[in-house]
Image 1 (spheres, rainbow, N blue to C red):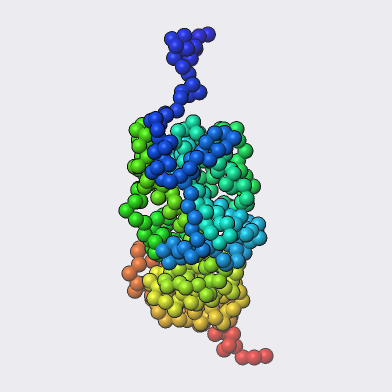
Image 2 (image 1 turned 180 degrees about the vertical axis):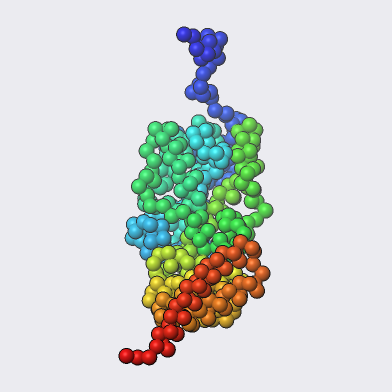
Length: 419
């Protein structure tokens, strides 16, 4: 049976993309690249690869934060779930960021620029690999593999979801082994979300640079959504000058990751000595340590955060988490104090916790009944949404009936004569 594919071939129509030649830059673009960006052409076994290199010395600070991380990495390794990280030297980490032909991923998306940085001694060496022609992809990948050879871990920002899978696909399509298979991987985006989700409206890297690192970008910065189109324009015209902002964007992404790793690893290594100005940051760190089962550290951080001017809702949540944590640690005395403090400030959950405590721990249904009645009063007087009020009242009315029965039985037993 004659298929559509057979009919098209008979008409001279090529099927698939195998025979489609990639766009070729205009003549002289190679020398223009060198002149525009001060880069050079590396010789690889798969052809020449263009690279722009920069070295940042030990004194360099990205905004207010040095880029050289000196803190122990044991807690960072525990958070990442990879104990190998704690044993690595800083020189074994590769900081990686890609600029791509699109954001969809898959085999049709390629990385036309890859920024990679690593420490050699105290200096941070940044290399930005760029393909002036899609046909140069094997050479770019080969040069990147050579750069990554001394390393054992990647540091990215959303790289687990995007950069690393994309590059693995490109290496596979070019029938090349992926140089970072088996590497440890620290993705800073999930960590940034844990630390600043409650305080900052955005956790984008550029936003963190400005509001956490105090390193706003210059006028050279270009929006990320423009980058693919700037590259396609270069392939069409051969003019590299509009790419200046793309090189700047990529360089700042990589350098910012180094500074962010230094900042966050220091916070995790010494949470009590960390210079945290915002109470929400302290509470976020407390939650992280609670999840790591570092309960003593978490309790101290919650207490520190509660001494700051937290928003009402966040204060309530923090007190509740600390009280529950103290109960899990077996420190009911501290938990009781916190519940009493929160109850005095009108927090309904604290009244409920006190009712539970006096009913089940102290076996004092009369006092538990008083706290339950107080909770019901607060619920009825509070300006709560209907569904929240119903939730609390359903629970409290059920508790009230049970405690009234217990209180009556206890009173009868006390009145009954002995013997």
